[in-house]
Length: 247
Image (cartoon, rainbow, N blue to C red):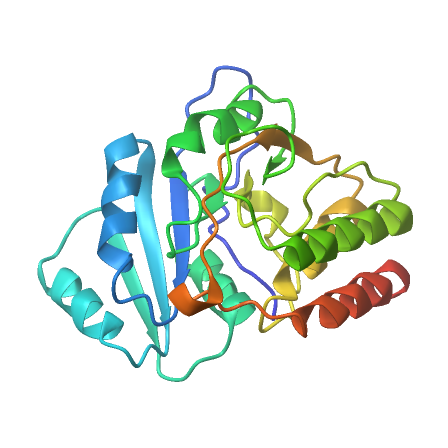
């Protein structure tokens, strides 16, 4: 699916320019965290809008979002998928609804801290790079993640660097921040977690050098609702290989 954004908002940054920030939150069965993450985003005070895409939740999350929608919060834009399509599908929908100049992907599970927003958007506002990743491996405070999760992340990032001549430290990070024109017209086929390697591959193939900044990370356990599985790793690797050689 090709991502379309408003041509009036996709503007190149110049140093010091103030750009509108769209925070895009894909959400699936996050009953206990969806309202806290919205409040955390608001507390930072940088978001022009918060775009939430509920991806077919069945645990009561939709009831909360319907209530928030009925309350007509001016900073909230809420979209509902009738069936679960996956993170990639939710993000493509979010991109099509977002109206800001900068898109920032925020998970709904409280693993990533919105207080990192200022340093994530600064390189874009200053004209350093149109794409910024928040890295969990550059020395920021973090809760120790599962060992095999770390190994999978490191191997996938290494594969990205070898295949695309990059020096990333954390390809699989949630915090991907970019000017809206980066995805304008980009065809994103990913439906699930393979969004991360597909988006990264297509950004790097555009000749864009991704800028990384250290972020904090408070990873949760599978018993707490973590959704990514070991089976997503080979799919991610195949995605990296495929888009290295396919336009």
